[in-house]
Length: 196
Image (cartoon, rainbow, N blue to C red):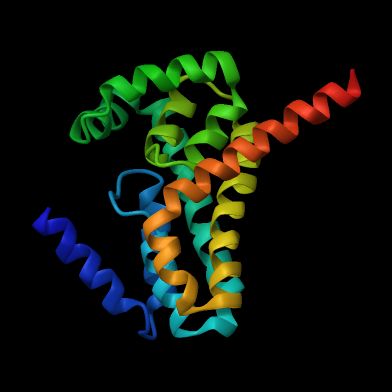
């Protein structure tokens, strides 16, 4: 935990530096494959440091995250034994790996949305999507929509409300994303019912 705390302190201290966007891009990219800290933790202080750039910062975060997702997908598809499984073992995510497999078999793209919006480690989603042969274009599309919603929702709230929303976002991010996912699923069910 001390190592993670030191890493988080370092990330927060980088938020107002000249190279912060490059660091955010790298954090967002690597979080999709192996990095333990979500890019939201850098996104928040960067936006608070320069609220006028909120949506540019969210875009950098999203692009890095999606490129990393594609990398994670191809690791799962072509290098699962060599790279993917060691990452899963390192984070002791073997049980979640089997759970995600069942989700992909049952829900396909919805499993991607669930991992993209909730506390499920996104790296597990990206690697397993490749390993279980989820359609690549569906995976990328759902990832862009779900991760984009996540990053731009946070950015929008911080842009509008600044420090007043910071504590809420930091402490309740998991709840916000879970409620968003429930809303998306309910909306999909209603939409599907209207079409039948």
